[in-house]
Amino acid sequence: MSAAGPSTSPDYVVLAADIKRWAAELGFAETGISSTDLAEDELHLQRWLERGHHGEMEYMARHGTRRSRPAELEPGTRRIISVRMDYIPPGTANAWGVLDDGEAGYVARYALGRDYHKLMRNRLQKLAERIHGAVGDFGYRAYVDSAPVLEKALARNAGLGWIGKHTLLINRRAGSYFFLGELFTDLPLPVDPPASAHCGSCSRCIEICPTRAIVGPYQLDAKRCISYLTIELKGSIPEALRGPMGNRIFGCDDCQLVCPWNKFAQETAEPDFAPRHSLDGARLVELFGWSEAEFLQRTEGMAIRRTGYEGWLRNIAVALGNAPPSETAVAALAARAEHPSAVVREHVAWALERQRTKAGEA
View 1 (tube, rainbow, N blue to C red):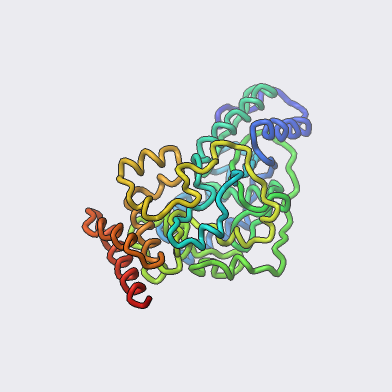
View 2: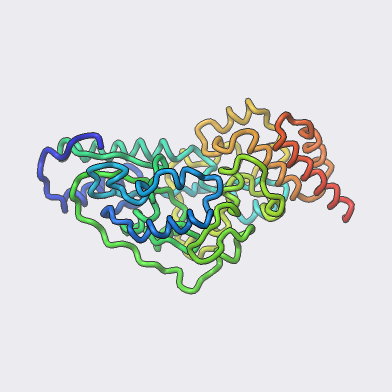
């Protein structure tokens, strides 16, 4: 919290309406307000951790109950202002078309442009400044994936959507292609009604998952999730999961692509989310040829930087192993066969064997 508390006693109903209007002016698609109660979600998180579904993401367990108790994370917190921002830019290459093109690399659509963290945090700060201008000093802190926050549960409680069977937030009017952010505050704002669930009997997301990471409704085993494998995991990708990864080199969208609610997905008006370097369908061989300097330069300010250069090469090597057999793919892989990284060498060797096996079967 940045201050001891509000210096005035405004009409909080009016203030809540003003906050939503100011947030819209700052580019947020929707805003809601919730209390700090996450008792049921705390139990769900504990069970998930006990099952080991978080894999190597030790930070998921590190903060204890602070993750599910906002007032422990930020003393004085009484309300959470949750916001969402759509991220699909107009003109982006068709996702299914890229997935069907074995010589292209698939990058999750949220990661094609500028990293959203700083952009949204800056706008949440501006929102806080607008509130300060109306009420004087008040306590707040902005979060965008920057602390142990159960953002989807908070957004659900604020009425922004329900948590689907794939564990992502779904909005009835906008699908699931959006980012979330929060402003913790000590202001006693009126809360919005939570969103009701509308997945019904649909199980498309569970059935489509290439690695069977959605082990049951509302249950994700991150250790099998392609987003985890290509971004969070820093070592060797389990061999049994490499084939199902296909050409997905950073993240995965399959569970969102089949979701019926995404027929309502909204395109973003934010130019910073536009694809950079043709990453909405770039050639695998071209991407595999990037030097480390090129990788760092071309991914500056992008979420893709999170995987690191070694992870980038590892992921693309797997995709090249899954690609249609070709001399071009073999030559690209062979050029990295003696790479200094043991992880890269291992995945290149696997990919070369896959290429040669498929060529022999052709």
